[in-house]
Image (cartoon, rainbow, N blue to C red; front, side):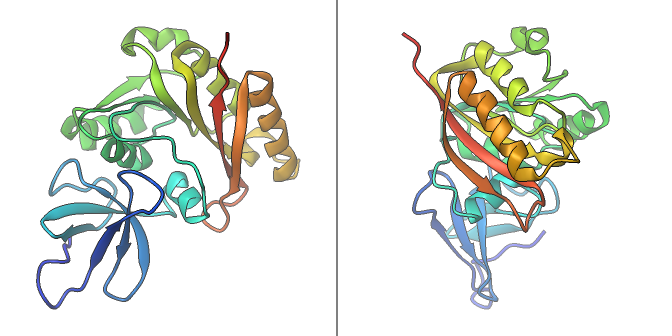
Length: 244
């Protein structure tokens, strides 16, 4: 682990992102610009990311090549609905790379419910991340069957984040939103085109997933392609329409 911004010979600067709460812009010694989040667990990183100390606060450098949400922000995503105090359902949390940054963003007042089907990934998530972050709950289940873990989620969530390598990604997200998302809540869907149809061009896959979301009551606000950080991936941001 390395830290910066304390000694005079290490020039690192951190400032709040101009658009998004609890997300920061980090300028490293060589002038490179990165994203960062304020570390909820001081002194501990998750996936080998660099820790930065600036004006007495510790930040985790957020690697856009390891996180689709960071990649989307760098690719000029205009809406990041996840905010401090929010409760987030995270589908496909894997070993916790992006989920841990979401944990930083929602802060100790928020919570991240982490659904992961792969036992090995969940074990890493539990041992390396959730054990140190009380605002994260690991759930070993298949996101296609949200009723199986409904008892582990207390009330409605503000946001649903979905990053699952399965066909019918939009349907999986919408099924979970039906059970858990607040009215007018937001969703973020990281579409992996090749997990849906390897024979079809990604743009057509994105259109089809968007149509699924629209048919399930969402208004799609943004679609951001993630190249070069993730090939044949897009981030879709949408809001649940009020049902009267």
